[in-house]
Each structure stands twice: as C-alpha cells, then as structure tokens.
Image (cartoon, rainbow, N blue to C red; front, side, top):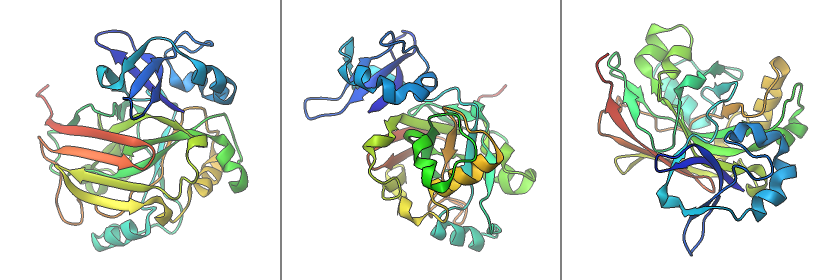
Length: 290
C-alpha cells in the first residue's frame, strides 16, 4: 500500500491511497473509511487490520497530479537520524576532516523541520553551507521497547524518501551537537507517501539517487549501510520507547556537498528518489527578511 496525506485545491488535509499504473496515477480518499481520520500516524498500529478496507476503498478518486501531497507523517513524536552510516560516505567525511564514529551515532532532527515532498527548502540567511543528504526513511508502526534485531522488521510500518538537509557551518562548527545544524525549518522534506513494509522485499537492496539541477550527486544502494536497519532499531529501542510514526533516517551515501564545497543555492532543484518508494523534489529559496 502507498498511503499519502494530501489536499485537493484549498480543501482540508486528507489521507488517501495512491495507485500507480499505466492507466494513470490516482489517489483515493480514505478519510472517513473504517475510522480513518486525517492523521496517517494515528492509523499505523491498525495498518494490518485496516488493509482490506484500505484496498477495497472506492470513494472519491482524483488524478494524482491534481493533489497537493503533504508530508506523510507530519506529527511524529521523534525524528531520529544516524550519522555516517554508509561506508563510502564515512570515508569522504574522514577526508573532509569529520571524525568517523566507532559506534552508531544518533542525533535528533527536530520535528518542526518536517516539510512536504514538493515544498521549498529555505536557505537560511545565517548560512553559506546548505547541504543535501538523501536517506531511506523508516517509519515505526507500533509502540515498542527492547526489540531484538531478529524481531525489528515486525515494528516497521513502512518507508519513505527523506532529504536530511544540513546546515554545515552550524553542524560542524557552531553547535557541539548535530541538533541545531539539522533542524532548521523546512530542512526535513519527506514523502512522497508511505510505502508499507509488505511492498518492499528487502529494504537493504534499494537504489537511491539524488540530483541537483539534473546533475546526479548521489547514486548508491542501501546495502552499503554499516549498521543495517534492524541493528538500528535494536540499538534505539534499548534506550527509548519507539512510538508509531517515529521516523528514522538511516544514513546517507557518498556524494554530499561538504567535501567539494558544492553547497546549495537559491534556485537549485533537489530531486531525491529511492527504488519502489517514489520521488521528492524541492526547490531552494532564500529566507525572507524577518
């Protein structure tokens, strides 16, 4: 299943099922079906139970192109991200003078950074080093704690495309933790929808690509992770209770802007795509004066 939050015109936010096909891509309204409201996060613990109703829903349907897609999960309790979790990326970070961790390195990306799959990314006036990072986003489906690696997949609701936008001159220089440099408003575009776990045979065998103005900057596969998704969930759930809708950004491959100084500027268009999960595309704009 591909589940999205969207609106038609100036209408309210809705939850819908996305169907892609040769006859045209469509979105079918689910809000009002089987107790589904306007929050995708709220139905995640019941996703397996709701699946027959979701697949059978035949309510108001629109061409996907007529819908404005919103962040699939706009209200998670936590947005957590792991640093330097791809082998080649760790090497390029080391070459750029960034220390390589010897264990899983986690940080918070504040949930206020979340924005839609086609919304603008704002380049802050206080930064000259705005960077991109394509990441596979994992969405937790049920409340869990102390999840063993072998059971970790059972707590995953699905996956989405994420761009862990980073303000490098705050990230590595101004703040002693990653939080501020990772949490500027609009620096968490995700989407375009949530693809349920049962649609992905192996989340560690997905191609991922990011381009800036049509030039491919990152082109890698998720099998290059140092710590795989299940190890990540086991580590995090040792420390904290993971909740439905929590987002885990699982690392970025080589090709970020920091090693070469090729940072984002106003007018740049950043396109991020992961096999089976779709595409997000965001234009960089300048921050307006307060």
